[in-house]
Image (tube, rainbow, N blue to C red):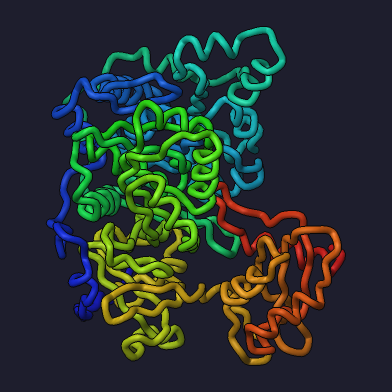
Amino acid sequence: MLGHVSTFQPPRPWVASYAQDVPSDLSPVSGSLVDIVADSVRDYPDAPALQFFGRETTYAELQDQIDRVANGLRERGIRAGDPVAIVLPNCPQHIVAFYAVLRLGAVVVEHNPLYTARELRKQFEDHGAKHAIVWNKVVATVQAFPDDLAVSTLVSVDVTSAMPLLTRMALRLPVAKARESRDALTAKVRGTVTWDSLVGHPPLPASHPLPSTDDLAIIQYTSGTTGTPKGAALTHRNLLANAAQAKAWVPSIRRGDGCVVYAVLPMFHAYGLTLCLTFAMSMGARLVLFPKFDPDLVLAAMKKHAATFLPLVPPIADRLLSAANAKGVPLAGIEVAISGAMALPHELVVPFEKATGGYLVEGYGLSECSPVLMANPVAGNRVPGTVGLPLPGTECRVVDPENPTEDVAAGSAGELLVRGPQVFSGYYGKPEETEAVFVDGWFRTGDIVTIDEAGFVRIVDRIKELIITGGFNVAPTEVENALRQHPKVVDAAVVGLQSAHSGEEVAAAIVVEGDEIDVEAIREFVRGILTPYKVPRRLFVVDELPKSLIGKVLRRQVKERLVALTTGS
């Protein structure tokens, strides 16, 4: 699929910048994802594996539920290699379903449970799964699929059944607030296999074949910029390797030694899946689950079991810090918080680290890479404004995007190419798209970067989102950063709109503070920062920018809205 695989070995200057006790490389992984749960069950059977609204599930109980649900799914006809859709928020049933599917050698397909019917249908059209484990709030959406997409096994999950008894009783109270909370969490459904019926099965026989290291484990859909679903096909090896790389990056956090991981990121997203779920299970950690990020719920959990390891995004860090300060709840005990998906402002790092006494470092990855490729060292030599250093076992090159077999001069900007055990083998069912993103076995990230002498990587921009105006390339991020420096601009998203004169023209959607805004004054302000061809020719004031659940601005949707606005379509 990948054609010729290059044996070229680029230098690795970043290894010298690794924190103390971080290895320069890792041994090859073996086994499967189900083994990391089994290992933690063996070593810590009575330790809490999951915590959900205060209710705990031990590792031994987790394994028992996995084995029972796996057998129930097997009796429903699920076999090795079958794609099985999971459409669930963060909850204990999500973790059990995830490993039960994998235990059968089947393939997990993760989905956002808040997707519209159209978005969900497009992904089902792509992977064709005939089995689905679904939050009961989404069951009606799946049942409304046309006949050619109908699933043969539809398992409905009531997430409230995993809550503590007193919480469930409170949800049943005949008062408006309880009714509102209950309606947001659960719904009555018909014509499905109930989750409880699966848990009631006897355990799967231990003799049932285990998946192999190079078997397909997960189809993870990329956010992308085209709007066409593309599922990254990730093997057990890919995900095991990335979990091992994450463990190696934080040697101060010891396996089974009171490690607590907070899942404030959705596990249907590659970032949350690896750095919350897979990492926690491999560490024998207590995984505290939150259906969505709620500062009050997180602070309540902090009072009992502080997070040792906290994957997040900058907006979550900001909101958590503000809520902690307002309520007087200490954040001490958070040893390592790792931020991804967007740039981490240094002005947020300083107060966050002061409040926690730990580190807040920026990382970088893509769904196609399981997803983590690099991170700043958890040490004093971290470099703000960069995404850090390639993880152990990860190789990088910076090449000419027009000629990706040619490396650029050291320190120059170019497209980032990567290779490593966490890098996927291709897009599910899309050989042509796969071929387009590999060059001699190196994956083309589509990101423009520079790497300094110490090996720190700085993201310049995305190739696919570059705006070409009058023959010049304009990086949207650079223009957005300039706009945000204006005291009245709260947020900005920059895209290219078709122009009869210059190919594309730079356009910006901005969120502003106040009612009386002089748009021309904002453009004049940006002219003082950027060369004229980078200054937005058109500015659109909007109430808010469309963002993903982890807070990333969706430029593609911004562009679609501006096109509709300017064409009247």
